[in-house]
Image 1: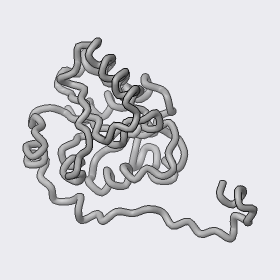
Image 2 (image 1 turned 45 degrees about the horizontal axis):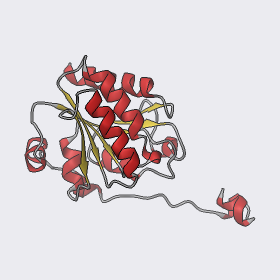
Image 3 (image 1 turned 180 degrees about the horizontal axis):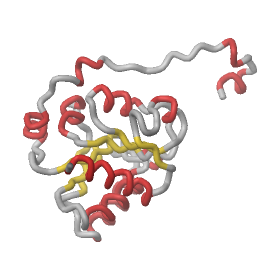
Image 4 (image 1 turned 90 degrees about the horizontal axis):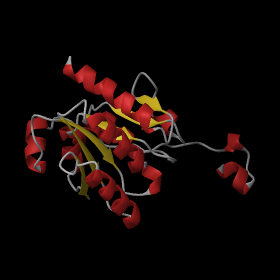
Length: 189
């Protein structure tokens, strides 16, 4: 889209993708990470990392989490990130409260110790509705965490469906729920 916008041939571009220092995401003890963040040690934790906004797909995550909660009582769902869209945050908080799950589906707000957060999670879920790159995918893989992501934007360039992630259609809470359930089942084995 950049080439088209500025009228330059695509073959004149080189793409340099984002990266992370993988060493900062390795060697962090899961139990210690959970203690540091005040999280229970005996629960399965699914986490979405990204600012609260339409783009990141928290609505789909919440709906999938609500649907999973009854069949999987040992699973908690975390959404970590700054609140950019206060109205969305309010709607989601109300939906979670109405479902009676505020103790199992939670917003953490901004987390400074991001590597510790990845170490604490059992899976990283990225149901983005659009995404330019998805740095959280690289961070999750550096931390050795399973990834579930929406098949949008550059995400299929960053992860490979069935190899480094499970890709689901965007805006599809049922597909997201099924993918999370499959990882929960795999973890239980």
